[in-house]
Image (tube, rainbow, N blue to C red; front, top):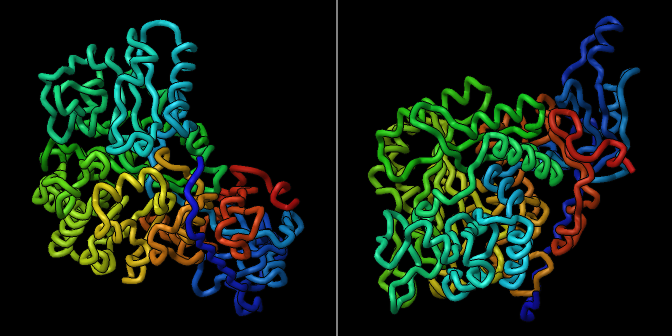
Length: 587
C-alpha cells in the first residue's frame, strides 16, 4: 500500500526503573519453622535478572519474581527474592529481558473470529483484486453448488459508502450463492444467486433495524445487506456444529496466548429462553479438555427485537453458565451500527443529509434493562459508534446509578468512534469504563470514509482516548478481533503515536495519544478490572496468579514507532507456559 507523505509522530517513552532495594520488595513474612515446612514453602520457580514492570503503582519495577503453585509469592530485587529458593526450585535467568503481567483483551469475538479463519477468510486481502483471487480459490477448492461463505472484507476498500456490489461476485459465480460478512460483522456482501435464493427483490421491505442496499434509480438490491437485513439470508448459511464452536474457541485461545493474552471478554454470544447456550456448552467442553488457557468473561447478547420480557431468560443463562464454571454475568447491548453506511446513531445529521441514524434499542427500554441488571449484580456492556449512541448508553447508566448507586457492576461502553465533548467527563463521573480499539485510532481508508460522513467539526472528537483519561476515566483496550489484529503490541504503538504501524500518514488527533504506562495498564490491569479479575491478575503482586509475558525487546527503551517489531517469547498462565518455553525466554 502506498500512502501519501505526512508528518511523522515519534514518541519516545523511557521510564527508568526505580532504585531496587529491599524496600521495593513485597513478600510474605517468613516465621521460623521446621526444615520440612520451610522447604514446602519455597518457590517452584524463580525468574530473576529481569526488567519487571509490575503495573503496581506502589512498586512499579522489580528484578525477580517467585512463583509457587501457580501464584506469585514474592516480587522485588534478585537478592531478596532469592530467599525463596529451595532445593527443588527452578531458577530462570532472563538476562535483562522485559517481563510484564500478561495482556488482556476487553472486547473480542472468539467464536466469530475463530470460525472466520476456518472458512473462506478474506482477512489477508488488501484490495478488491485480492478478494477476487481468494474467493475464486475457495470456489475451485469446494466443488458443487453449496454456499461459499467467508468473513473479512474491509469497508474502506469500497468508497464512498463502504458498500460492495454483487457484480464483482457475479463475475466469479452466478450458479452458487456467495456470501461474505464484513470484518466488522455489520454488513453482508452477496451475489445475485444468494439474493435470488433468499427471495430478496425490489419489493422486499427493509427489516426493523436493517437495510437492503439498493440502486438509487431502480430500487433493485445491489448486494449489500446491513445490520438485521443480514438475517434475510440465514437459511443459506452453512450449519454450525458444536464441534465448530469448540474448535473456534480453542483456536482463539492458542492464537491469543501467542500474543501474550491470558484473559478476554467475549463481547456477545447467543442464548435461548430456557437458559441454554450452545456457545456456553462449547466453552465448557474446551475447558474440560484443558484447552481454555485463558480467563474468560462472557456477554450474553440482548435481543433487540424483544423487550424487558427477556430478562428472566438472561438470568437463567447467566446462572446456568455459573453452574458450569463459566462466567457470563454481562449483557451486551447493540445500540447502533457503523458510520460509513450511516447506521451509527448521531446527535446531528450526517454531512449533506437529514439522516442521523437510529438507535436499535429505545432509550427507555435500555435504561430500564440496565437498572434491572444492576439490581441483579450483572454488568452492562454497550456497542456504541455514534455520539448519540454513546450518550444514550451513558444516560442509561446514570438512570441505574440513581436507583442503585453502590452496585459494583462495572459497566462498559465499547468502540466510541465519536464522543461529544459534553460526554467525555461522564465516564469518570459515572464509573463507566471506556473500551477502545487502539488499532483503529489512526488515519487509514476506513477513517477517510468516517470523516467524510461526519464532517470536520465532529472529526475532532474521533476516539478521544486521551481526553477520557484526562477527565479521570478508566480505559481498557480490546481489539474487537477478528475485526482487527489482537496483537497488544501493535495496539500499544498506535495508542502512543496515533499512526498505523509502518504508516506514513499524519497522526489522528495527536493530542489524544496516551503514555506507554497508560497503554500497558489499559491492556493489563484495566482489562482485569472490567472482567472482575483485578484481584486475580493484571499486575505482578504477591497473591496473584502468575500470568506473565516475556518480550524480546524492551518497549520502555524503544522508539514508539518500533514497538510493533517486538515479539512475545513466552506467555505464562497460572504459572505454566502456554506459549513458548522458559528456555526460549532465557536465551
